[in-house]
Image (cartoon, one colour):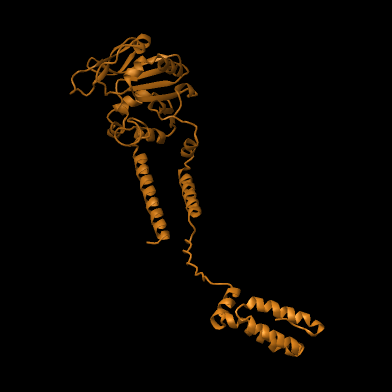
Length: 347
């Protein structure tokens, strides 16, 4: 397989892998599996997206999500839902209780529903010290309501099962706080069954604005570029830019179409013209006849300009110096120069 075909195949495989990965994340985000249980972003039975969407579709109702601490929630006349709160951390976090009191005191209704999957009763803490509420835990796993409120001094009971207090309410300033021993009344499964909607409606009260808190799940607005892109639905644009960047890198990494491999150049190794002339002379003129051959060639073009005496003397030098062509050439040159103005050429 050629190099350019291998690169195209690798690019196609990478694109297919990226598409499958994005598709998988898209399916998970659509179902909400990546979000915690009871999150309003989760659409499976353990999420609360159905309640959020239902409230948002009601005439005169507004449903929103909060990704900031409760102190950043502005305005009054709002029902704020905190679902699946860990009862252990809720009982010991005095700052959280104070923040909820301040939010309720401004004229809002704070609904806090506990996470029911606990193995032991939460220890008394800030919840009992400040709000006079104590948890109880039913040791019988067969009972539907496992966690409940064993004590709720100065609280009005909204729901109970025998001696178990399941939902309580208390006024704080201009607003109120509602505590639920469990969050199952707010999940998608319970909303679809519609068997606990009366209690949910009583918990929300007559407020037209409902905020589902996502910050306590760890889903917080970071203010990053990715967060802004998700907020303004720019995920597709980011994917397109990433593809363009990959294509640009690939273009600079390899030419398109790929350059053909250079053909090996044939180099002829030979000799110079002077070397060729010397070789030719050596093949056809023996060294002993070289002086005579040069003299004959010179004499053929300059015979009329040479004196007879000089020709005779040069012929004698050629015969006597046949074994040494260079010395013969020097002597002949001296003879020809000695003839004065009659000479017009040299051998």
